[in-house]
Amino acid sequence: MEINTVNIEKIVQQVLSEMTATATPTLPSSKPTPTTGRVAMLTAKEKFEIQHYPIPTPGDNEILVKIEGCGVCGTDAHEYKKDPFGLIPVVLGHEGSGTIIKMGKNVTQDSAGNPVKLGDKVVTSVMFDDDADIAMMDMNKLNLSDTSSVYGLLPDDDVHFNGWFADYLMIRGGSSFFVVNDLNLELRLLVEPAAVVIHAVEQAKKTNLLRFNSRVLVQGCGPIGLLLIAVLRTMGIHNIVAVDGEDKRLDFARDLGATETVNIKRYNSADAVLAAITTATSGKLADFAFQCTGSPAAHAAVWKFIRRGGGLCELGFFVDNGDAPINPHHDICKKEITVVGSWVYTLRDYATTFDFMKRAKAIGLPLEKLITHKYPLTQIDQALQTNLRMEGIKVAVINE
Image (cartoon, rainbow, N blue to C red):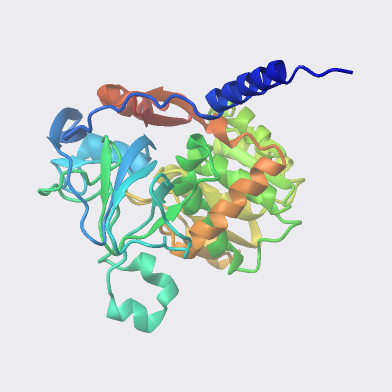
């Protein structure tokens, strides 16, 4: 059989040419690097201004992040409406995430010891300063230090990119941050509030009253309460009663693991609410309760929903919303209730948070659906107003 070598060579050359063209994609045209970026500066109560500033160059220990988005927290809403921290003018936003685009030569790993490179997705945590009194008492209590701070609640300075409601964030040297490449944007925006919840659960565990077979009551089904229900579910707790005044939130509570729900607005007296909760807890009240609202009236009521010898974790008051009247005889002494408070989080809570999110995803809990509203940075006032009206669940600002 005679072989035409000329034709074979032509065919081979054509195939190689096609393979080379396929393996070498055309690079997109490079865009000029911007020299300025936007921040949403809170310049007065209920008033943001989109301002432009030169993009800073990170120092040897700093990181420049291109922001993808940031969730709106209740603390942001309080500062927006009342300025209780006296920070105006300020760039708010502490539930954010973005991509490292520049970093100093000394930055090699995140706060968990993971290697860091350009292009990594990151979130930030609390900035802890040295506190000799806290260190002497317990290094794990650094979250209680008065010297700690957080991006999004920093006074404005010559950097300006100090909060996540902006195009860029400058992560200062010594700050705590974590690489989160394995989480999508929606989950990354939920890391910070989830860490709040994880810390509360760790506090609750110290009472030895939170067990797999405990009847647990969660009062308040906003983002914190709903995330708390999801955490309890991933812990194997199956008796979870969700208490709120909105049916939509209670329906979502069931999606995240609540087994019983009580809408307090359906009842016309405190006794009727107590009767409904007694029924929901099989006639025995709650072994343990988490109070997740910032309402003094809700805090006063939650004691009534806990059995004698039970426990309570209060995590709803991150700002001062006023005093809550309780009866120490009936609510504390007679019941011997064990009470713990919870304040933000520690670094180790972040590691637990990442594991929680992976477990939640593995068992099909729809955490991403917590984000019900998305606004561009130019509509940040609308985002905060939506939060204040308590529409949806989690509002987020997403960069275009």
